[in-house]
Amino acid sequence: MVNILIDGLMERISSAIALNKSIGILLPSQNYQELIQALFERIKSKPDEAWIYVSVTKPFLNISNQLPFITEIKNIRFIDCISRTAGISNSTKNIIFIESPTMLEKIGLEIMNIFKEVDPKTKKYLVIDSLTNLIIYNDPEIVTEFFHNIINRTRARDINIISLAIEEEGMECYLNRLVNLNDKILKIRDSFI
Amino acid sequence: MPETQLKEDELCETGIEKLDEMLGGGIPTGSSVLVVGSSGSGKTTLCMQYLINGAKKGERGVFFTITEPLFKLTKNLDTFSFYDKKLIESGMVNLIDLRIITERLGLNTEKYTVEDASALLDILKDIADELNVKRLVIDSITALCYRLQTPEMIRDFIFKLGSSLAAMNCTTLLTSEIPPCKFQYSQYGIEEFISDGILFLGDVERKGDLIRTFQIVKMRGTAHDRTKTAMLISTKNGVELETLLRSRE
Ligand SMILES: Nc1ncnc2c1ncn2[C@@H]1O[C@H](COP(=O)(O)OP(=O)(O)OP(=O)(O)O)[C@@H](O)[C@H]1O
Ligand SMILES: [Mg+2]
Image (tube, rainbow over all chains, first blue to last red; front, side, top):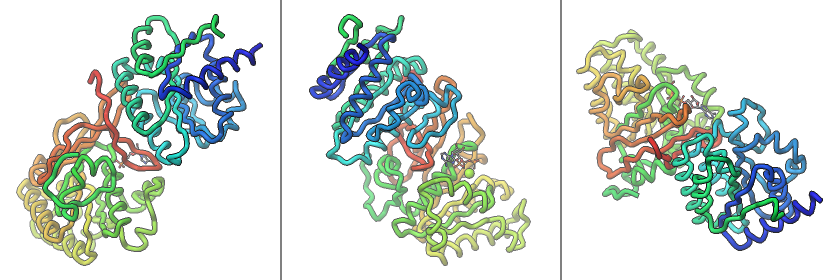
């Protein structure tokens, strides 16, 4: 049962990123776990692509405890923006820890620095998980500016971007504004999957 | 990129990508530039990176430290990936403890007389000349000014130092320590007027966190960028600049 659900999500993500440079995924929080699992399965299935996963929602350790297979995925680099703020001070190799989700410039710089080292012919993808959590730690205006900046720079460098917007009460207007900056919006609904 | 009249060989590249862009290619050769910031703002790191980047492209440099003993300086540097011990060993980057020099000269290490200052100036010039350096750093000019007793002595010292190094086509960075949150560029208010350029390392608060900032306040002879940018320090790349997000500042 769960597998069908994950497969369905994976299918939708795959076809959306095949056609669009930037996609926004709007989802209820109860579907978060399935969605990121589908995303990681998709990443794992294409080892010749280069992925960066910016996590603001959960510390890397939590994600990897729930989805142990992700530690085996070679074509992904994590930028963990939340562990330090949450007081988790492990230093997992290959993971970039950002002191705080307010350090938006640093997040942007790390993303670009990593992609600079990737072979120009390799397909590059960036995941921002999530716009919602960036807004929780920052003023919405600055997140908009950050996201604009990232979208423009990734477009210029032929990097595909997927950003998650986890629905949260009272934040609809900010999230819609951000998600609308993308070429394509995927709305995840229980009824759809 | 700002336009500039200067040709490439009249510019001293810092090797920090975005900084050179903002400068229109680099610092006009022979300038003396204040690197201003409060404690921990990254002055020493920036200056060292400037020397090391220069050495990597064949320009010899010298670093005079007054505030930090050499062993501490190199210990901190060791943590950065841009730091290359070989450049020190090969003499492309020279680290010199100014206090040891003043002791050898028999100067009072706390307060300099006019003669002391003149002797020190001569030795700095001699070292720069002998090593044939193209890049020189004094870390910090504030600590040196403290030992010069009057505003006239400070003015005279910095002016003479600047002009002799300019004559050698040596580009100089002088670090200037300021108390946090004060709007001034130098402790004595004189250094900033004599220097050709001012690089200001500051910070802005965002949700209680401090974001490092960088700004070129002045650079004589160039149409430089004056925007405030974000500055980051990392083990891998040392100082890097990045567009500052400024909503709601
Ligand atoms: N290896 C490193 N990786 C990342 N950041 C570092 C590293 N080493 C130092 N830093 C950061 O750089 C700052 C120190 O910068 P630096 O010593 O250049 O400042 P400074 O302006 O010269 O300070 P002072 O006025 O105390 O001499 C530290 O406070 C630290 O935050
Ligand atoms: Mg210092």
